[in-house]
Length: 394
Image (tube, rainbow, N blue to C red; front, top):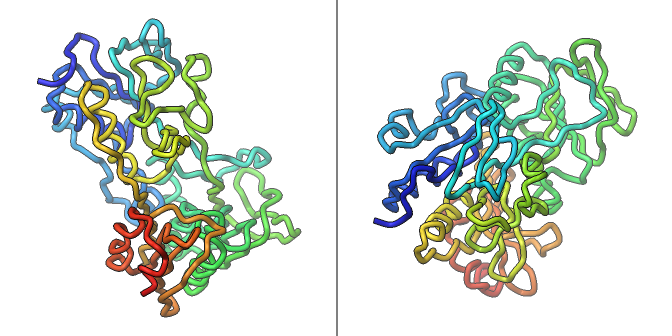
């Protein structure tokens, strides 16, 4: 049997994909020690990407990753509704908001990110961020009677929420300070195609402008844009990005710099403390610290971290990042690490679906497709090999 066995065991902080995958991988590796998952939510660990999509559109959707029976059968203890508030790395204990302190042999942090808010916005009903299931359910309930929503920020969350609200019949104004939606990630050319998609679905896309304030008494009634325009709204969704959920580690001596600083297998600066997922900045093959906020990255990191924690040889991490975004009937997929200033080769575009390759220093570094899953995935090997752009342009 692999792994250490003790009465204290492994504590995992987080209630999402990372926590479940870690617990699952530990048991598959025949780790027989106690496993405890700590989450500040009362829900069983669940999948978060559907929050901006299926959860908004369907009140009956189940996003639970594993049923209670799984945790019972695998002898995994769930401490739900108790947030981790601090770590004592010398005593090897985690403090919880209910006053308890959990000892650990190894601590794995998978707390993800928290959405950024706009500090100048007053506390009014109808203003939302979207990070957890309860927030998604509340937004869905209010959308049922809403006439017009203003979405601040046209990143992936903002675009997905816009698509979901349009499916519910809500008028949507999508406000983005950049020249196009997703411009900082995919560049303005592909961002323009995303903008075209939303406009075709009736979204009022306002780019090159921000938000200066909101109006209303108890409930939001409107939004003032930075160009002085007043937009009526009974629903506002703020999607301006997120930050790593590390505030609770302020006095822990665990190094934090745009996330928890880790080596290439998830070890932090503190002994027997590990981190993965959106909250973690792992060292890549070139020696740089990289924090990746993609769903697929979590499972790959778990495959690397668990063997390292148990003292086994860890497999190499996947070298080609992958993420996707469902907007209307178009699945936007990205392989590789495209940057906004790369050379973009738009090779297919039928007015709705598209395929584009990203070139840097003569090599293909990424591919983005809208509604073209087969053609996107075929490029994985070329990107991994650092192939010349000519190899994919044919």
